[in-house]
Length: 100
Image (tube, rainbow, N blue to C red; front, side, top):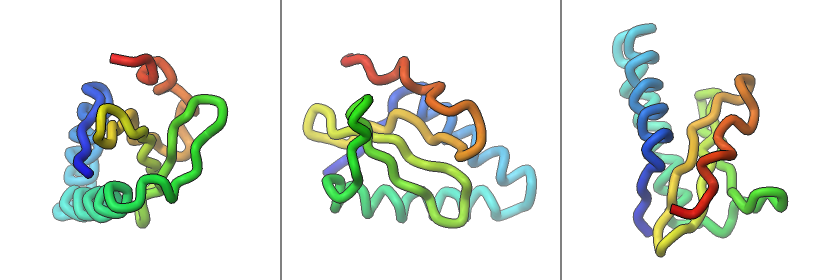
């Protein structure tokens, strides 16, 4: 299964890579690898991740980074709604759930 980003989630993704790369050379690339590894697992096993009964969104935790990938199956693909930090602004991404 393929994946695509909600536009706001894509902006978060790019900002996070840039942020980590500024912190330490090569750290942005490690973030990218952790993200891709997690997405490979999600695309192969999306139904393995528990659905939040309140909003119908699944969550996968990225290893080595304090972010979760919030996603749903939408239009025969995985739609990434947010890359949310574990300690910042919970549920800020709820407005992205509406059908596009």
